[in-house]
Image (cartoon, rainbow, N blue to C red; front, side, top):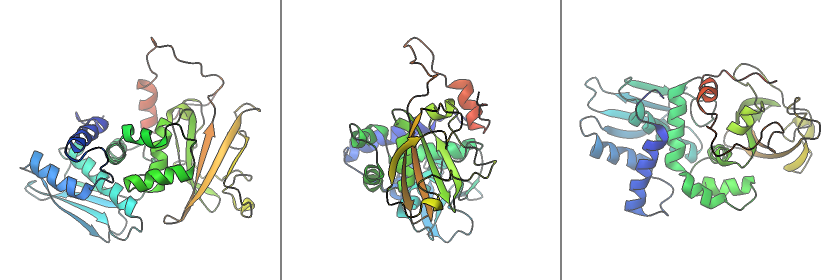
Length: 304
């Protein structure tokens, strides 16, 4: 982490306070009011003085201190069509304020920095995203919404409505608690814009390096234009067209939904546990440290 304050711990601490004051059925979080009031109460010498929407050319959000560092301005792009994206952006910039304001005076966050999960090479952006998703969609409440139900974009849409976030943000949050391997892909014109694999998928080599490569969707993918007249939005088939090194018999479930406000298609890919991955014994250490440090820096492990 780039700061002594850790994103999940800070967001969970604020969530606990909100639970105490407002109760557990308090969603969606009014994050603009929260950023103002919390900073005034806890950091009165340098609070967020204003949260405001402007037409920010090239940026989704901005956090800026005045010359004396006695006040901070938080801006979000008012031209963004999604109210959920605006809420996530405010929470993201609030995360920079809580976690990183002692490191720099200005944070300018562009389209690829917020919500997409495609920021492994930028630790502070990943941390601000993690803070935002934890604050807006606490895992204890999120689990209550999805436990015992098969995942679908309708279920994730319910979560998006409850938390006032985009379908993309809700889907990314779900992949964090998915029981097996899960990969979320955003695509347009038959090519991937970005892709996010959960830890189980990443460790097995089921990922797409979209930052460094232009990757076309498999021709039989539901989201590919070759299948534009296919009316189904969910199917199970072979994993190899997506991941060539998966065993021949490995199945994959594919779900698609058009994210109209962003003009791209979301594809959720679900894979069973990788064949080489055995169950971890209780006395084994989790494989977090070295592996995740490589992943955060965009240095994905080689597939074998």
